[in-house]
Length: 333
Image (cartoon, rainbow, N blue to C red; front, side, top):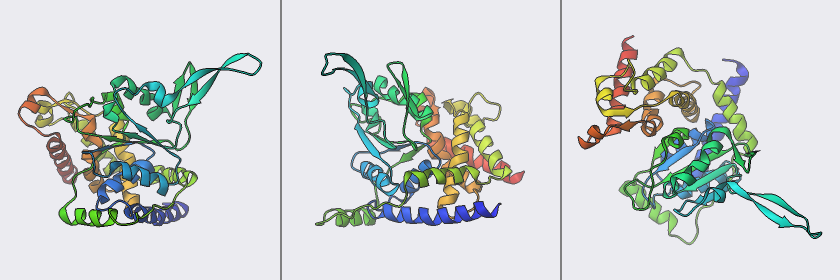
C-alpha cells in the first residue's frame, strides 16, 4: 500500500471517529444503524431506514446532514404527493413588458442530502420520480436534463408494509438503495438514557465535522482501498449463491427464493466492506465484513416465493444460511 494512501486512510479514520462521536450526542444506542448510515454515505450510495414510527429515524437523518456538513432537504411522502412536488416544475410567468416565458422552479430534490420521510406512503408513480436521480444523479423535467448537486445522497425512512396507508416500493427502486438498515426497539437501559436525554430543558445540538468537499474526498479514498482476492471471491460466491436460477444456488435458495440479487448487489458489497473497514480503523476489508453486511445489502434485493411465505420462512434466515455455507467453502479452499 502506498504511503500517501496509508496516511489518508489513517487521517480519515480519525475524522470519522469524530463524526461518530458527534452523531452519538443526539442518537443514543443505535450504534449499528449509525455505522451503516455512515458507511452508505462513504460508499457514495443511498440508504433505506426500515422501522416503526418513533424510533429516531428522522432525527438520525437530520443529525447526519449537520455532522457531514451537507445541504439537506426533506420531503414528507403522502398518498397525494406528485412527482412535480419532488422534481420541480415549469411555471409560466408574465414579464413587465407583457411577454411570457416558462421558468423552472427546482424541487426539494436539489439538495446534497435528501430525506425521503415515510417513502412508502406515496404512490408508485411518485416513488418512481426518484429512480433517475438515485442512479444517474440527474433529473429530466420538460425534456431538459438537470444535474443534481454533489455529493447527492438519499436517506429514506420506511414503515413496515403491514402499516396502513403504505405501498410496496418498486423492485427497481429498492435495488438503488445501497443498503437497507433495520431500526429496532432499544433495550431497557438504552431507552432509559433516551428518556432522560430528550425530556430535559435543552437538547444536545449536533455540530459539523465534515463538509461536501471532504466527503467527496473520503469517497475517493474508499474506492482506492485495496481488497484481497479472497474477499472479492467471497462477495461473488455469496451474491451468485442467492440467485435461485443459478448453478451456484443451494437447495434452500432454489426452494424458497423467487428472485435474487443482481450485479449491483456485488458492487454494493465491494464498496460497503471497504467503508466498514475504514470506520473500524482497518486498512482493508476481511471476510467478516462480507458476512456482517450480507443482510443489509441482500435483504431488499431478494424475495421469497409465495410457498415459502406460506410456510413461514424468513428471508434473513435464508441469507444467513447461504452466508455461512459460502464462508465454510471459502475457508476449506
